[in-house]
Image (tube, rainbow, N blue to C red):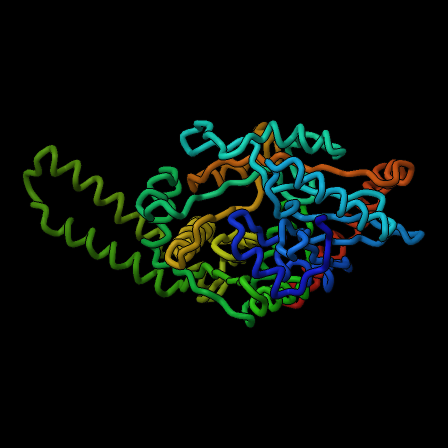
Amino acid sequence: MAKLVRLSEDRYENYLKNQPKAHFLQSYAWGQLSKIKKNLTPYYLGLIDENKNILATALLLQKHLPMNYCYIYCPRGYIINYEDEKLLATMTKEIIKFAKSKKAIFVKIDPDLIYKDINYLEEEKTLPYDTNKIFETLKKIGYKHLGFTKNFETMQPRYTFRIDLEQSLEEIENHFSKTTKQRIAKAKKLDTYVEIGSEKDLKEFYHLMTLTETRKDFVSYNEDYYSTLYDIFNGSQNTKATLFLGKVDIDRTIKAISENLKKVNNQISILPIDNLSKSAKNKLKELTKQKENYQKEIEKFENYKQEYGNNLTLSAHMIVEYMDKAWVLYAGNHNILTETYVNYYTYEEHIKYCKEKGIKMYDQFGTIGDLNKENPRYGLHEFKKKFGGDYIEFLGEFDYVTNKPMYFIFTKLVPFYRKIIRNRSKKEIENEVKNNNERGI
């Protein structure tokens, strides 16, 4: 008879270490972050057989509600063979028994199960499991599917882009769009650079996150949240958080442009002055135009230096690793010197970093399914698409309702409450950004 038990950190992580679909949202570290910064109670549970062998695991996050009620969220679902209907039913029965003991009104799961996988050529790939069959099994067991949502209505993104890092680096970069390759080349030509940051760079990272959020009209977390995440993921088993900083040293950039200007002047100087052939005239015209452009660029960057100073961090991205996978969890970008394309270069550098570390899967963590060009997230989607990953659609969220009357109240009233909280948090962050700008921070 299988039963559900609590697992120690070592036993829980040792089991997940051997599971190919383990996700950072199922890690012990994520449960600890959720406890400290989101006021959720984590439970690390395992379904064990009579010989105490683990058959499946789950990280359950308990969200406390008024009147001693709660709901339970299992991020990215159970670590289980979803094709084993009997095992899934047993796991569900035990989880629901546990949830009822906590007075939970429902249990939410959003399994890391792919519904559709479209490659960079927009061809649908064959999946290693029958998602439709699993979908019907979940409904048969008693789960309620919350729909094939198209934007960010769910706890975790229902769409993402993933890059298979088991390909060669040449293959990966060949899948970049032409525009992306050109912009990365421009960033390198301007001698911008990318560094791996440390804890002392979290303040700069947070500053860029607030700029990005204010610009794109969304709110996430305060500075302490990112600092706590960084500490927990760099102090736990199998997890790591890394900051990548895309930077410009304007003196270096001016020097790089000046070198190109010098080459153009040398090419002009060797052209004969008199009796230019038609091809030589065209060459002179082209070189003269390049010279003027380089001169304008030098002047422009000299003005930037006067206005912003010499050393600038334009992009700051946080990558989280778990086992042999990595996710671009947060990315903050400045709204100045965008023509340097440091953001593109930063992405290329952490793709290369993950590849060199032996990471097998790189996830850009979130995009949309509604590809209407009027969608405010359409630009984000197109940007991520340019890196050539597979366009992934997940199966979505499922709720197992354990208290129908309270579930009805919760699903009607809580969205309204969350909207009030979001607006309040957004206002607080906007005021913080405004005050920092006024103080010159």
